[in-house]
Amino acid sequence: MAENMKVYQKWEDMAKYVYIALQSYPKSEKFTIAADTRSALMLVGRYIYRANNVSRQERRKAIEEADLALVDLKLLIRLGMVLEFMPLKKYEIASAQAVEIGRMLGGWLKSTIA
Figure (tube, one colour):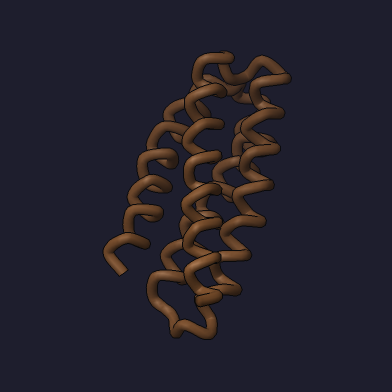
């Protein structure tokens, strides 16, 4: 269980970073792409947290849902960079964090099969 909390800690670190990066988005995007990005970010966290706190049977589905939500988050972060709301350097850091979480989720998913 402690190993899986590392995934949650990585998500928490990414969440802090992305929230700060979203502050550079224009006010006109406050209720659109910035809000969608925050929602996707929170959804990833909820599923990771849920996977840490459910039965083994339910864990696999929660991990899969976290991974799907992470795909959405990556898309939104990239869109923010493409639209030049997020500087390239911040995009690179946030993207690398998301990729790392994705790898961790993949490993966790594999461990649920055994």
